[in-house]
Image (cartoon, rainbow, N blue to C red; front, side):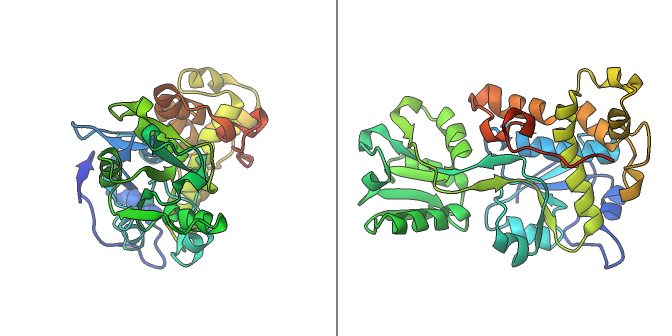
Amino acid sequence: MPLTACGGGSETSDPTTASTSRLDTIKQRGTLICGVNGEVPGFSFVDENGQYSGLDVDICRAIAAALFDDPEKVEYRKLSAQERFPAVQSGEVDVLNRNTTWTISRDTTNGMEFAPTVFYDGQGIMVTTASGVANMEGLAGKSICVLAGTTTEQNLADQMRKRGIEDYNPVTFEDVDALYAAYQEGRCEGVTADRSQLVARRSILPNRNDHAILNVVLSKEPLGPAVKNNDSAWFDAVKWITFSLIQAEELGINSENIETFETSEDPNVRRFLGLDDKLGEGMGLPNDFAARAVKHVGNYGEVYERNIGEPLGLDRGQNNLWTEGGLLYSPPFR
């Protein structure tokens, strides 16, 4: 599989034991190995120079910053939908940040632990304007491109069955690029994926106005990082580092002003920055782990705007803070 490295060597087997957390292994190795998609602009995308960017990538960078005070100490593994869970289970990657939906079967049968949701999404459908399709019923007798081995495949089948549409033709692909290439070549009248992914992919199509995203949401798709089950120390670290980006925005702390908060008398701010108490030490992290993540990567609002809001023009909506009518909410740092 393609590999872009920023740091030392990698491991292909899980070196942890029942008494050793993966957190200890990562700290000893000195780099974080992060599984990503690499083919979705705004979330994880690798350019022609091998540089990764996106919201999912920034979550990886925030974890590395919290652990090592350096957001570049990450090795990225580009994983397909079929490869992602085995890569976590085998220990090939430390954490999965690959636009992955949190579902009951993945949380239980697949033995994953899901950290906080970093993007609330929903499945949609994009069609060519030439097809004349305006709603789900208009897809009867049409071909729809869908990625195999994902929740989108099942959701499409469920919604078609619910509507009594039986004569549609799902065309499955193993690779995201192949999926959209087939759609662009006209092999399918429509393509289904997370709505955010459709917006991102539509933005790079040669004639974007020849494509429309239907006003329909097929499912709930909470996306976030995931780690292997039965390692509470590593899970806690990923969980609270992720929460720190959300909490920082709520406190008004960002990468530009964080130094001005170091003299704050607000006990909530001081605990969050690691100036008082020892919240990091209690889970094997530096006490200033949250400050490191925000300083190097930014708060959630900065991450969203940099990767999704500005380049894709996608409003935050459900991905606003709870204080702004959204769903993002961090437990207290105390």
